Every structure is written in structure tokens, then in C-alpha cells.
Image (tube, rainbow, N blue to C red; front, side, top):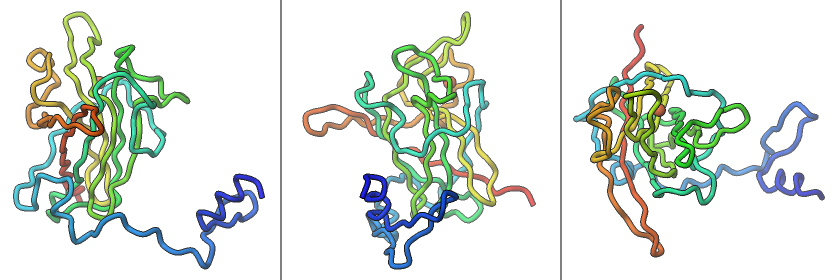
Length: 220
Ligand SMILES: [Fe+2]
């Protein structure tokens, strides 16, 4: 059995011609890593009572569609301070977290201070889906400031598009409290700047940020 077949069997999948894959009839659901009833103890700083729709920002010229689904934006050993972002995507309409919402993320390369071209090179770009509690988590490195033109500075930020069925698509950016250049960044918004908690694990320092996103319902 070749490696691909072994992997297919491991996943409980069987091939159907060349057109696609179907789940084997005896395949079992993947066990959950945590209990959905435990939603309040995970990730989030918000509760349903204090939701405000997340402020939008411009899309900008560097978005590229089709980023891979993964929970780590950067390649292994990317220079910079490791940053873990956790949070939930919420519905302003129902005041509840949204399972299966999509988050599309992109940020600058810390070495070139530029965006990857997104044409086969999706460095520092990723998509992910929220879990059954509306929660998400990804790892990256803390983005650096960059200057897109003369007398124009962008403070560190991560661009994102959040989408969910029945809700308005949100284009915005995540910023970090206390970063440089925010006072001269015309696209900065204080409500999008989150506190950075410094943590240590296995002798290594990293940062943790909680960021909840609230989507408005789509117009009927
Ligand atoms: Fe940007």
C-alpha cells in the first residue's frame, strides 16, 4: 500500500474514481477536543450582553483570495515575536457565537516589510473556520510597521475578512495596544487595538492576544 492509500485509510476515506472522495460507511466522527458547553471558559472576553459590531477598515490592495486553511500564518522559525491570537466570531443579531464562520487573514512579512504576492506564495496568509463554540486560534509573529509611501506609516496590524451565513461581510484589521506609529497611522482605530499579554512556555517568550469579532446581520 502506498503512502497516500495508507493516509486515506487512516482518515476513513475511500476514493471514488478521480472526481472526489466519500466518507467510508464505518467512519466515526472525529472526537471533539473540548466540550461545547464549556464555551464561556474558552478564549473570549465578551458575553452576549456587551456586544458591539466590530469597526470596519479598508480592504487595501494586498488581499489575495485562496489562502490555505491553516492555523499558522508564518513558516516555521519565522523571525519575530511569536503571537497567538484567540477569540470568537459573534453574531450581533443573535448575541451568540457563530460556528463555521470564516476568517481570512493576511499580514506583512517581518523581514521584507512587504506582503507576499499571494500567487502561489501565501506566506503570512491563511484562512480558518470557527469551531462549534465560534472560537478560533492562530499563531503568527507580531507584525512590524511599514511605510507604503512618503510620510505614510502603517502601525502593526493584521488584515482580516470575517464572513458567516446571514451576516454582513466584515473587512477590518487587528491592532495591538501600545505599538509604535499608531498616532501617525490614519487607518488605525483604537477599538481594534487589543491588549498584548506576555507569556512564557518551555523557556520561550511569546505573546497572547484575545480578539472577539462581532458581525452584523445582513439586510433583508
Ligand atoms: Fe496592511
